[in-house]
Image 1 (cartoon, rainbow, N blue to C red):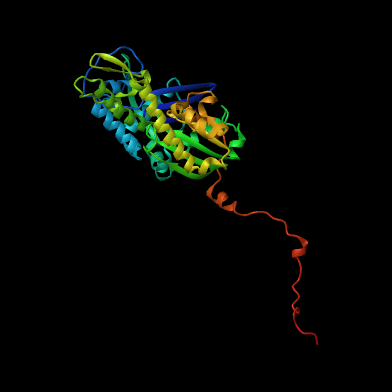
Image 2: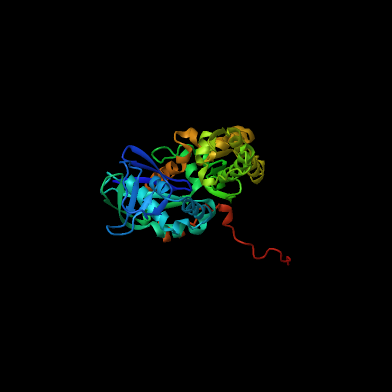
Length: 395
């Protein structure tokens, strides 16, 4: 029996959706992997506290939430920065560990079931690196995982080449909306009309425009107008704000990796006092959101000939109002289709996996080459002798 898995490893977290029989499962792991430099540790029996090693006696790694807790700020920033700006992040050992752990945990309880997996690459990286990523992931994976206070347990699975698919991240959301839970075509209109998919991640804002299943244009303005710019802008504004309220006029620096809680709560604590900075947070989101939508508006040539604009990605929620204001009824919001926006790509990858694995078997290379031949009808008017004497003078 097969287990269909969509594994979306993003900047902030790894999102996985699987189908095993009649059950759909989803899982989120914070995207962070660091070496264990602490030694023996004690923590409560939380399954999100994950440790990884290849075999007993090998180096141990902290994964996910535990890695965040155990890493220093500079180590955290270094990892995030490398992941954000490197199109070949998948070459790093951390990528492989995160893929193994997230896929392996999703396969627990599915002994002897064959994994069929789809993964995604950002728009800018897809064409250049999809084959290299396949080579990186195909093969047997054997390792050990420890969760909470439970002992290490061995996990093994094999990814066969014919069971691994790599597509671009925006395309994954298209399949989420266009296919039903069985991987069958649900919204045929999306494969007929001209559609623009806007996948807004933390560090990337990817735009792909399609007509049918043909990708007309790939555009990515990585780190130009994306959620990371909100963090940079907020960091700058909070320094200014803290100087204003500081009797010593020195203020405080707020590095971007410390701002998740500030954006979530709208508050900062400074020199023993709590300050409401909700309006500053909203202002930063509005400033970046407006620039982002202006950029998309111009790149899509005002979207006059585009039928639908699909908005997806973990950072799409704060920018949704600016898209709605500009594009109106053309906007399709991925979260309206039954799953959190941050899981839309993973769910689309899972559906895509089902659709491909149940498709008609691929033709051989010779059969594909033969399809260039086209049958046609020869009209009777074409069977007419050429008059060899035409044009000659009569005697």
